[in-house]
Amino acid sequence: MWENDIDINEIQEIRTRTNVYFGIGAIKKIDGIVKELKTKGIDKVIVMSGKNAYKATGAWGYVENALKENNVGYINYDKVTPNPTDIAIDEAKKIALDFGAKAVIAIGGGSPTDAGKSVAILLKYPDKSASDLYEFKFAPDKAAPVVAINLTHGTGSETNRFAVATIVAKDYKPAIAYDCIYPMYAIDDPQLMTKLSDKQTKYVSIDALNHVVEAATSKVASAYTICLAREVISIVSKYLPDVIKNPEDLKARYYLAYAAMLGGVCFDNGLLHYTHALEHPLSAVKHELSHGLGLAILLPAVIENMWEAKKETLAYILEPIAPEINTSTTPKEANKFVYEWLKSVGVANKLKDEGFEQGDISRLVELAFTTPSLDGLLAIAPTNADKDAVREIYEKSL
Figure 1 (tube, rainbow, N blue to C red):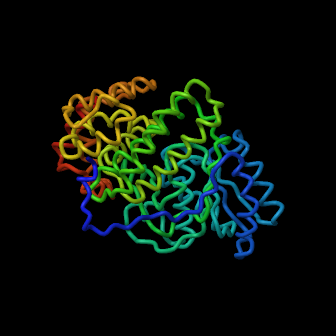
Figure 2: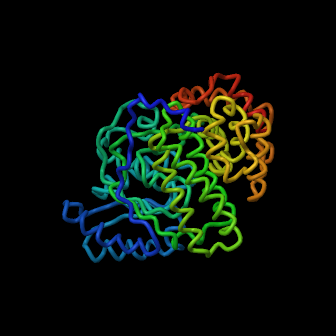
Figure 3: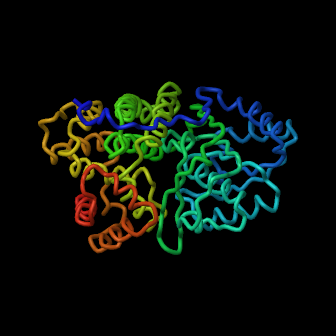
């Protein structure tokens, strides 16, 4: 039983801090949110987004109307890319400071939200840069208010204190975690997610699944994270095939968004380890690589690595996607079962399919241990996450 993996004498902190408006039509809550910002003296904001999705989904119409009707000035930085960079964050920070922005509204998936959180910190530390922030040259304890309007069902960034960015000059993709960047409000409206492409639908859902696999097996996992993990994986296994068949299926989108939100809370509590620590070097080197795809490629080998250490928990949480799995399963069989599920949803990729070769592995291993923050993730992995273990996961994922 998975309960045997929990130390009942260990006192754990359970985090659920962001107020989330969730459900079809939740975007309409933005008017009340903007009204509240105005009562707090916030009369100018910067809106962080990518180039297209914030308009194509219809989210921008609601946000712009709310800002105009409440006489809140705004400037839009619409150049956030997947795997946001320190360069873009610094550019947005300058624009926000010059404009006099006092809060951040992020519209998009994890990238605009993470970039928005970063800008929110830098608005309070104008003499600092994004690289200062992500290389841990200072530890912020304040940030401008953040409102996150989520357009994907994957990252969970709208519900937690994490943000990620790439430092381009060094191929670093660190993660930060500060209480000051919990969004004040988040909006999860499934009707804004129906325009996700088939690939992104799959990749973001797999991101949510990875969050909970790691949060349920880390050294700081709790009964809370394990129970959330089982629920998230059950929902993803049930509803991802429905959305693949019919992208407009609002019921399926609703539950995938719910799973992703729970996933964000789950890893806010149980944190992350192998797949995220090893994926960040992949998309830092190849910026075009989708984060969720990188995680999918690594997941089977990560499951194999930690199977013996956490097989009771893993057998419990993975059963929805691998009904054959049980505590008598071997590590290689566990790898195979998870890979077969990934194949069943159309994500059978390996690292070689994305342009990586054997000769790249030494550089990836180095980045896993030299990128700021990733050593902290590896330190809470359930097995000894030394360079040999990391190399083996990469090699088995080729």
